[in-house]
Image (tube, rainbow, N blue to C red; front, top):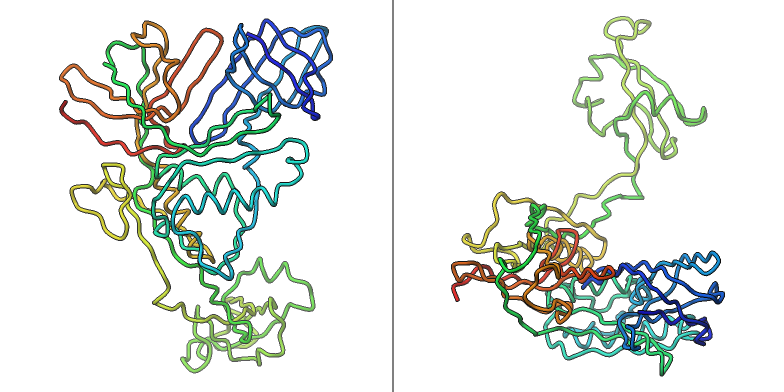
Length: 432
């Protein structure tokens, strides 16, 4: 095996031979890779690499980082080509409805990404294709007539994960361009789990209910009120913002004067104080010269009462790994309920974050297969292929290929997802 090295002009500058490698390809998160080998030429200007087998067939490609070369020995970190999507762009739906079908969303993001990422395209042309995805997506988030800023990779993740899509990437060394394709796999393989060397891991589900709420700014900038404060706050103020006074304990407790622990403080005209000003109020019982205790207040903006009709969306993760909106059948409910609330000034963004959390919590088991004593060639499996795993009683579950790791002669395939990754719908055990 060898590695072809290209500079920023996309010229081939050398090959690395006697390669040792460690590559982990992932469905949703970025791939990682490490390489080492021998090269007689200076490759410090290396920009992109193509990893090939002994006869020149393509295996993998990526950007080069952390290049370290000493004499003829070289090692470097491979950077996932999909990292070009780990960038922010704007999506302007301020004068129009947002896409309601996933393919149309892909089309919009493709167009805006290419327009707003001209720097890398001046070095490396980018081509983005996608297969048909005619799924309704407005239930996830509706961005009609909004202008939003999004990280492309993070924004796409809940859509891709929920509907079973992922991004393929490759450097085309003939056409000298990056090729990306948003696609899904429908291949299904069947295996008997006892025939494999394997590891089985299970993770607890941390969240099974996600609530999206609109962040409401209830501060009233046109009103000032007194609120309770602390001695530490008062002590830390500048002298011109520190004030002191005294009040009778009986007056302090009188309903028409100061309410203990409330926002009402009528001893002074509040308009003469700036926001943030502090007041140290000495409380005496019978003798004004003898202070029994102190209370502290500060000037704050007033507040509006939070409306009761603000939008709220509730989503549940079922024991069938489906996402349910607003309510969930009792037989599908995961107990105990573990909820997380997502608040955002854009309600649609709160919805997307809530959906992402539940997709992220799907499927709390994974199985890692290795090519040691394997009855099938694991290299025939691709990311997002589905595998029917049979037990000795003829029951099976379908699990997706979520990671493929290649370390020299060792080949490892992960079925299922950790709780830190997005996953695919698992249909549960079924009788064959």
